[in-house]
Image (cartoon, rainbow, N blue to C red; front, side):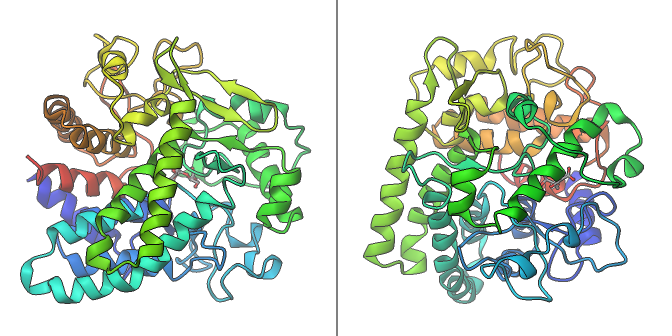
Length: 434
Ligand code: 2M8
């Protein structure tokens, strides 16, 4: 029943070769949503799954960056801020030419994990075709990772620099201090649409946040989306341990696919270098006192010490740590909170002063984050915890009756956008992965 509902949701959100992240709130193609969505499609039609990724990578920038949104839905479909706020083709030669319209920032590189899943699920009779399509996509994936390992890590620290809260976890408290330092002039009149779609302000970022989000876009435009210039002058640069952990997992996935893709020695060596560098980078961010990995604010030189899901970066990356993180994961500060409806990882720990159980990335439980953690735990051979996480996650979705964007930790109630594609996609994957 759940499988049929999830499959029906993906089909309903299918816009023909690409999938809306959700039908009303997010009507375009989002980068990491697409990767999760491809994992969902892989359970229904591996060809369609490849098409999802191929379409996204057709909008890749010449720098290798895969943009966070490809605006596909057409001018009559409302989304704020739309392509005119970015004007990428007009500002930067590295952006794809019109009519392709994108943003100028990116999101965690889940794509290689999707290709790995697609290949695993490809039936023998389709293997020649899918192998050829993976071979064609692979160099683009390597370029994407090269962009992250170089332009987004000029220090060769192994850690990816995020430029904007929209690069994954919008109003996470991880960004609060960095945003508070930014003196943002009022960016001019604008009308948010997200709070029309979802009129409950307790579930979404504030106007204070939006003023800063838009001001950061202004600044990125001022620097003509040039990474070297941004690195020198731009005020919001965070070494994001979660993003970096996903890159580690993704580099390992590309290495795993190297034979299928017929990768050359040079690419294999590069991937191995980035993988090692990423692991060392994360190890350097581990705080033995708290047991969590800390993000780092490049501009202020501060460690960002907060109990959020991102602190478990080593587990997302599939790196064994001898048990400290697992104990913490099970504790009342995270999955083991006795008041939680489901034993799942919240976006922010309820022990944090800034925790808000209904507000977006400031407390609620996100299925895709728990999917990434589940994947990491499986890689570590922790089938006990992984199975629990899968069962609880499926219980949460089935119990709410909705494929919601996020869930209230104490009640398990649906929050955010409804009919969210990536939630249906990871549900399909969990259902098939006993
Ligand atoms: C959310 O972000 C968008 C902006 O990109 C928004 O709030 O309008 C985030 O959860 C992001 O990670 C996600 O990719 C996007 C679409 O699901 O929604």
